[in-house]
Image (cartoon, rainbow, N blue to C red; front, side, top):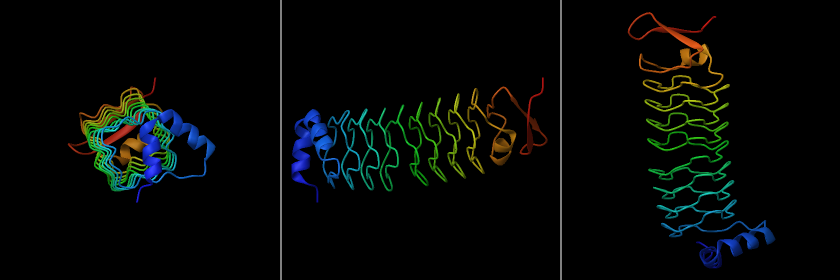
Length: 224
């Protein structure tokens, strides 16, 4: 069960809460199954907090430190997670419908097998994140850092990946039909060849697609 003292302190003042966290850094806040729907937790220090099965619908976490925070099974629908540090946070079984991660840090987060359709991941740090077999249809990944990110068998149909960093990104069997990859950096022909694309997929200016049939293609770097 959630610790009532932790709930009371966090609800009373974010400033006092953060001072308490600095004074007792080894204490891991227990907020299990808490109802924090719609409350303001902006800039709160919630490192390693336990939000298991918590109600966080529409909660404002903007700028909060959520490093290694446990959100398993929680309701985060419509939550504002912009500019948060969610490095190594756990979201298994969480409902993320309609939430936003703009400019967040999400290194090494496991989003495999998630339904993430339409979520805003623009300008996020997603290095080494795991999106294998996730549904990322129409997500916004503008200027995201996707170096060494895993998208194996992910659905990125109509996703916006303009100006992303794609060095060593795994796109094996990813669905990139109608996806926008204009101005992305370090995307290679091999990465495109490993994915599924169509004639509406927009690749960077330095790559060229040669269609050999309705479904088969060859990708190569443009030569001057």
